[in-house]
Image 1 (cartoon, rainbow, N blue to C red):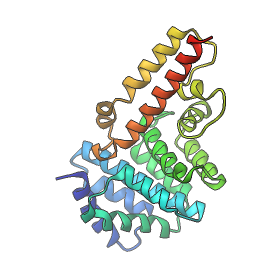
Image 2: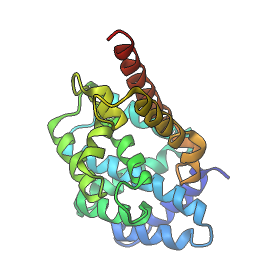
Image 3: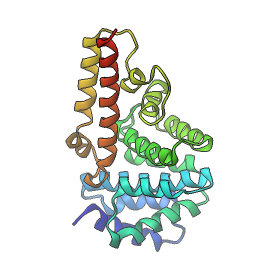
Length: 239
């Protein structure tokens, strides 16, 4: 049974509850999947991505077709399950709880409890992928994403590195993407690059809870890391 089949069962259960707010969603994830920690992590990640995407759309005030397509790129939802995903999306949008409450509860459900938690970084990466789909990250989306990062305890330097994978920040861009200072010896740059590629291998992401169906996030991230490294390498070669 795929993650989508299980998620469909879960959404049907949550949608029938009396209030169906964020507290109900989080408690249902813990209860329904209490006997399977791996499945619980994957469902928690999926629920967090869908719910926070809905909250971001509400904060921005408009959902473009480009953003819908980007959402579908990440989620690759089977046609028979699109209705269930839409139900959870709508539930999160209708919930009177603000996005900060959602982010706090999702961080507790998905996070490691430490700063710069990689699973929460995966969620933030997915949100950036959707936000930039129409060609730029709008002001309201930028404020939303920055606040999510603060709640997720992603420090400012790490946030800038994540953002640089999605937004052109200028001449320092490739170094920011790799999270390394300009002027470092090339061997250090190469070591940092290899670690990032290793850390973001699809198998590692799946091992920490990223569902197979969401691997688009990993491939997009690695592509940005590769491009940044190649830009630095070319620049140093011709210096």
